[in-house]
Length: 413
Image (cartoon, rainbow, N blue to C red):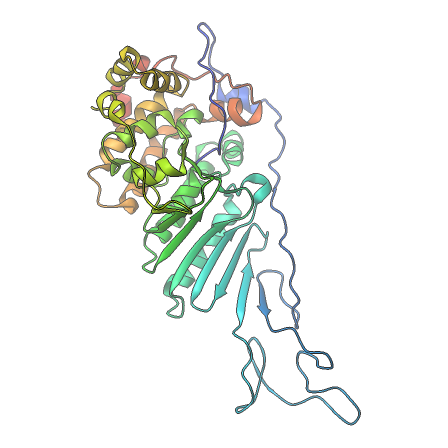
């Protein structure tokens, strides 16, 4: 999950009561609309079905010829050809046409699937919403990934996002509407679908390359981080900011965080901090950055000193008492997040260190969702950050110190 890149929320002022789900249900926020844009239509020589368009891009016909006939002129009729499933096929001995490039679009046009030779290409195509992942998008992506995985003619997979970012994450505003309108059940179904889709990429079994640029957060990292060669543009802004909206760094990212050097994983999970391309390369979250010859050396000694251990209260105390301004700034960030989410995030990263891989971490995420969503800060966090945008969330706990550790253990396991 991921709300995309947003500004930091403010710490809840003392004395203010948290909003209830019933109060939030009374708010008329309107239906969630789809912000995807339609892709440019290509010339196609035959009618297609709307349910799944299969475009075949053929060489442009030379003057005086039609795509399916011979020379047009006096006493010259159309040449007879054998017809295959993708159009006319020349008889043996005639020059072969250029290789066919097949493009398949999901019904809502928010995802475009392409096959170019043996390379399968998945393009997120909802740029006005920063490619936020919806239920319909996951329902289109999952079966296509399964088909490509099982197709011996497909030798590799490439992941792209259109517009100014790869993907801001899952559509959490839509997920909030699910919870307000139907309770926890529909939201859990959405997360289960998302995690199954991420597992398909993690277990694709063929080379996967993720092309990351601009905003790459939350659910976008669930699609692109696991088992892929991750190529970043210089403008990359990478984060798992879920603690801002009452969730935790899910989509298998706790497993990735648990493998980072030193205590960097706990730092990123508890603060939700956005990092740039050089930092992502230095930590090993991407494998190459366009235009960079080598990974930079990062100065994270203060992170290793302050974020050690399993107790979030002790971590905060070390950060706030540190003479390093970076540590104090990290403490301020954590204080502005959901206290329950911060505690769950740390516990999930620590537990993921003992898991075998990202698929097990995705299973852990679903268990956490079942334990956390019935009583969490998600509805209020999204309201403050993305709906009303007042940046004044009224979380259930005022401080990390107020969270019962036994509840965190029950949620994470």
